[in-house]
Image (cartoon, rainbow, N blue to C red; front, side):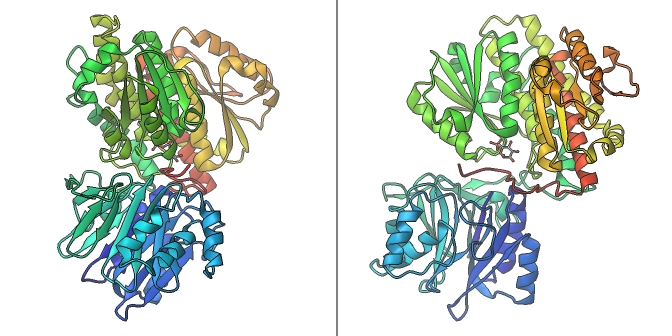
Length: 610
Ligand code: G6P
């Protein structure tokens, strides 16, 4: 989703801004732009639709020479993908603004500003911010005061950075609903929507809080909270582990991240298990006290993280003896829901910034939940900061928009949560240590699963010319079938649907013919025989089947049935292991189709607007 970078320095900043934008590309965007104030105190701006590289080429051809600037990658919400709608937006050649989020009262503000004589050049909600600040600057002493006055009139979500030719060393930034971080340098300071953008120039960060407005100069930073009080915020030293690095030997980040899963899972487990159980400390201070009291778990998440939560429901109810409900965040936040006594609210989010999940977490604080836990991959994110407890998945930076290692590490964390809650709800020591053993075996099993890459690549041509596909699973493999279908949709643009295999005869069977490949994720448990019947139902109707199964499941390949033997593993960790071949399948199909694997069309890595 949209990305912001800004810099005020003594050196030229366009290179820093472009490098920052490149580092934010993974978030998904459709246009990009840079504005600087040049040495003659004039605003210069270049914007392009398409990739950051196109913007960089344009700036190389016509350099932007200045020591203060702001830059943006836009993911269209209001107004189409055009150069005119790309940020930065300017007002009267004096004010320049970049903005993440959505201004909900933009229509009424636009009318007011038009009545005052401002001419709009774009269809965006952002342009109202530029003109509003310009208007306020006429009656306020400086840019800081003008921005404070303007943001008081904004409804909706914003992370915004503003500069003014009349004050050409200063960036004023404001945060409400969209994250912003200030990067501290020596004789220079930076801002961004994500610290990743600034790692080449600093490791010292200040995370702004909701309602903060900050005045960022070359050598000073002043922050004002939502009550307009001067505040000091902690400076956090980044450990640098979060640097995405490059793609290494891999063609795409997604492939790299699929291959990183054994290491990522190992890191998720590290120092969090004893020989016999899961250590509560993994979930943060005070976890034991809270876990002892929990009688219900409410999980909230979006996208891939939602699928992780769906698997967890099977684990929590069957093993931890605790009831569990799960809901998509965008639904939860807008309906009146019943809060079970002593409920733990669990949010699951790779980024910790997804707008709907964050809003649901905030809402839960008014609803009487016993406490909140987030399962998250970004330690500095809003969700981690605003939850009572946090479990860090330690997957490392995930750059591919389609989530892979974040998902399997979330699942690993959720299985650990099952033990951590279960031990207070009658889970036997034997059962705890059996799950711990399975978890310890997991990294090696993930390695075996990743090693299936070549075999799966060979299956990919069967899918590349198809328009539709069906994924089937049962029990805790049903959400894995959903995740497999989501991966295929996201990166190969093939329509894919997932069904609980028992539902097949209630509708989707009508779709079966030779043009509809059916992928089956087979468990190795008591549901296997039931699933085999479902497979026969498809075969009897001429469908083409691809069964991903434990070799002990004894499926045999023939004309209409392709069997891919996945390594044998304990049933409890099978959902995590079986995810890998499905990720690989979608990857290799996308390669044949020639899609943009790491940045699929229309999608964003972190959806920070509703
Ligand atoms: C976007 C991403 C998905 C992700 C979802 C939730 O839609 O493209 O890959 O699963 O957001 O993101 P989160 O960061 O909350 O896990």
